[in-house]
Length: 98
Image 1: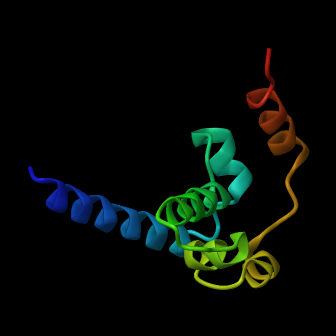
Image 2: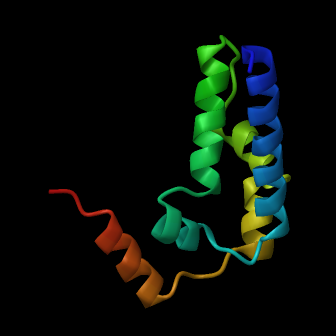
């Protein structure tokens, strides 16, 4: 497979992942972090870093809007719930270093 085709396939897979995460607003970021070790915010940070690697200035909020499909504050107000004590404990346990 040539590089152009590989990049096109990777881009399509990324767009599908972002679309899926937008549709599954019931899945909280803390659940994604606890199960997969990444969340929508991580994708936003990776997108911003890739843009900056190409010399494209992009702030974090602009990157988050691309991933969330709306300003983060709006998504948070519509979809984010308070993390349960169990979710918080799982997050802390999975992010201990040393």
